[in-house]
Image (cartoon, rainbow, N blue to C red; front, side, top):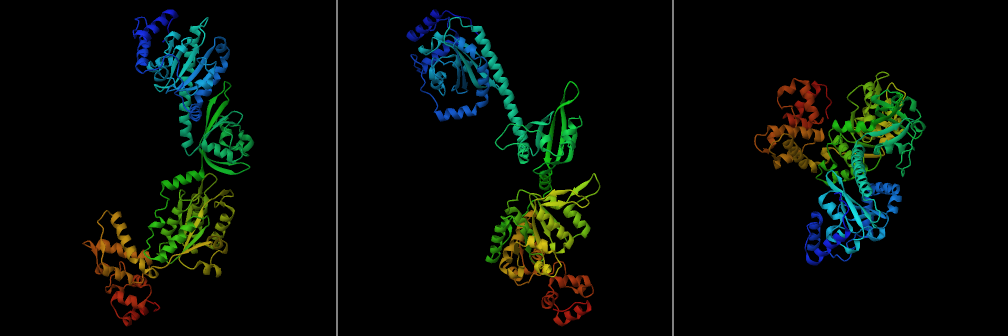
Length: 638
């Protein structure tokens, strides 16, 4: 509130009357009167201004650091008006919302040095009535004459304070204190205070929103650049700065951008940014950025931002996303993540626990690895667990099956393929960048493809089928093999180069017949998974059923056990799975159809693992009878 000059003698009389008799003269400003009454009720000493309530030097430094944008802005303003402050012996103070003095600018405040006043709390409960307390209470600028100050030693100085409002809340208070009245231009001081208030509020408004925008941009998975005409980078978000530092364009300890893209990007004239300065926008273009340090591949959008008066582009905004990051996002969105952990691998006995411990150790290193074991032993689940326990767990887990396709399609699926000059698709080796590529049945991979994969892993670069461009890869290979891969390699049936790469770490998963102590826990685990998956009540497995399962050799291993338990789970009417609910041959029934249908006989033969005695028991026939049908269908007896 702007107030005209008042008689200092009258104001002194009003003040003394209140101090001596507790009486308020009707001519006292009502805000000042209420403030005097509150100061008295709080018991604030009026002889001398107290500086007892102050923060420690460490706390002051932390506060100043926290409010550095406002401090720096006022510092720049005070420099420009220093002569005016000195001429009229004026001090400028910046206080936080708790009325703690953050900084004293220009001349001393209340004839105190900055060291004395900075860090002092000067609210009404600390020093009584002041322009600060009234401006704080009423959230408006207020001029207070010296005789109206509560502390007598401050009554030689007039002061004017104004709240700095940000989002309708007091963020700071600024105060101008005039030590000498004399020819002091009150109107000019008030005008200066209001100008500083408006300027600081505008600055903080813009600053908070810019910081919010920067936080949003830093959180995005895109590199964002603002490039000026002349190819200088004026702004880059966090990922953009990282990319610039990665190519040596900016020092890690330098936040100021002084980067000319034409100096660091070797193919700059062939990029969308260069075309953007010719007024040509680009949207979601696959771009290769060639630098001395590294070659990047991005999906990039460039938009001309504004134009000069002569029609030339003044600046452009470029938004790009590394293709490897995009693939990781797509991989996660498509569910290319580990479904199982090593803890989910059931192990009732010590032998398999030892294998799990070894898998955990191997998972934490960087080597490519090989998992060996018979079909159905759980190699794929083991691969999932290793990926999840590895440092690459945040990356994608991509799977490729070597036995499901032709060599030509396998090569394209693995390395990618260029359909024409405009369309090129990445392979699974690229898609697994930053993560794990699980290669199942690797023994079925043709030698030429295996040799090409070995070369790619050794060089860290891969080339799509039909292209001559080398692309960086960063995938860990976890391979699975049903047979003895070392023996196949020694016989020349598998690539020696690839075997040497993936065999540095090997895990051998035992067959189910060699871990019978785990069968009970495995069966119960399968039942639990089925009940949860189908939202059905859990079923118990009778003890005699467990013994039946333990006494079977399980040629199909855990996969076969899964199928048998699943059939029994849905077949059982009550809550207990009994021996009669178990069909060890899966969907092959022990009736006479196997005698006439070779396909059914083959299924039974596989279910029995090629063992005559076991098959005879399953079909409830004598060995002699079974030999007759073995001969009929052309099988060798075992």
